[in-house]
Image (cartoon, rainbow, N blue to C red; front, side, top):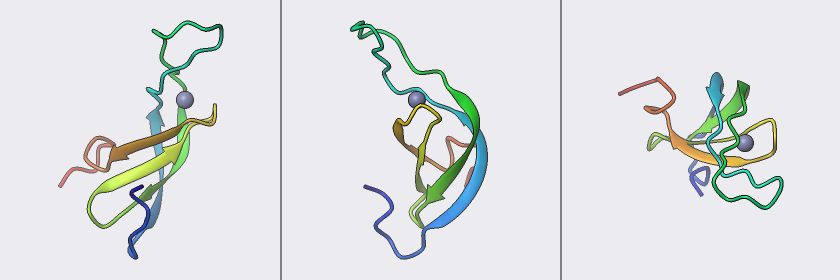
Length: 68
Ligand SMILES: [Zn+2]
């Protein structure tokens, strides 16, 4: 879990979800939800957000377009 640090910051980011999505038992689909989400970023550059379908995503601020 990447939000255990003391310097967690919240951003609103337009992004998308690539979590596996298995609505009918298939295991080769991805969620592909996209929109504005609240992203919680830790001081080490990791970030987490929950997509509109409720998937917990772990990513990095770099992957979200914030870069170094
Ligand atoms: Zn999702």
